[in-house]
Image (tube, rainbow, N blue to C red; front, side, top):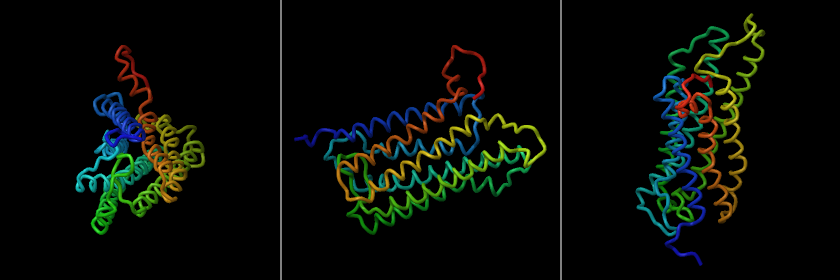
Length: 280
């Protein structure tokens, strides 16, 4: 029989993955901010910072024994964040894809980005974040007895499936839209002769083929997680289903760090013994 002072295995794995993800994400962000050789779109930084916030929100009560009971206010705060931050992250991902599209469209058609479009791209993740925060806060105020630490003391949530459904719907809609926009980008770039009379389309130094391909790969992952994970969320709760869903939540930020952190321009920053510029 497991001791109440032991840390549950699922909590150890989850906390370890989230901690590794946080370190890896910061290792991607630091050179992109400090190094002049690493150039990214503004929305890329919003996207990456949102995933840093994602890991931090899940780590608020990490590495606790299985019977740990956090203060209600702290548990409520984490419950709000774990619904709001993932929704904002998926929205930030869509805004990043849309900015890619607008920049590539300017490269092909010479159409610049309007001020309202730029403002909307920056404001959308914060609007979604605030909407889910208000919604989750209202749910918690109306049903305080449903705010709890999940089995194994991994993180706090609201027992009702409604906040999870809202976050899932936002994530599904934004990621599906991102995939559609990426398909449009592929058509624009691979068939430029149907748009302009040029033999090729040159991407800017900020937008490389590596970025486009990596974004395309990542855009599919949250959809796969939602398709696999939603039945676990809305099925009859049991320990095995909860553990599988928890594992899926921990894998996503690590994949973000691996996909966007293995580009050659970022790796070259850490390869200090090599003093030559490498294109991503």
